[in-house]
Length: 366
Image (cartoon, rainbow, N blue to C red):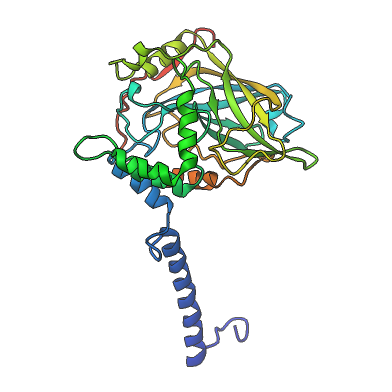
């Protein structure tokens, strides 16, 4: 403004300078998108390439998560015991009750897989705290993760891609992968040594990745956590693994919740100096101090296709104040890949789940 009301005319030189600045800004923005998308470096591992590989291994199943595709949505609440409040200032660890939405699922990208064919079960949770914060976590029923890096995870997906002739992974390709990743060979041995429980209701689900709890004084503590069933656990039997009923695990879970609420203890394990926080293939030594942070109660089923889980991304980096990520590289990779999967399925038509659920099923004592 030359006089406060009349725009001053720019000279040709000034106009060209401004256009150059605008052009540079647009080019920088485009370059940023190209970099993030991996267009400038085709060999770079990106969230899109990771999810693309899931789709090559499993096919594209529109409307479903690209991993943990087969699942059922549930709801309930968490009651903090107050015993973890000295470790973390997060409100969830104070005494009191907060609502929970969760999802039980099987690993992998096959939404109609037979339950007996999938060996890893998962529990994902979203806690809604009184101040509006959320804590989201995804856990598995195995003792350690099979890989320690995003690249290792991608390599595993490539190696386990079903062969066109047999429908199964190529043993030679898988052996070559394990030779390159001895940490995975060790982790797989530990996973195979653990005996699965009879179903979702009596499974223990582990965070696998390490995190850090920060208390009101700013003290940071390395932790892992697990949800441990309150009731007794029984081992999976050979008859179960030979089940021909494709949905026996989910049907049993839905029936159990229809009879009574299911409960787990949230048990926090405290790491000691030297315990790895950046490698989820390594279990911490037995005997580490644990804290019982409270009780999770699941008391009803939500519709998988129409319930609150449909548009919920269980991003492990959605954390309240008082819980922070560790230096585990898998955490940021999981967060980015989940977002990529969410973006794809959000734009697709909803498909019926293989798990038949009533609109809402509640335990008789809920």
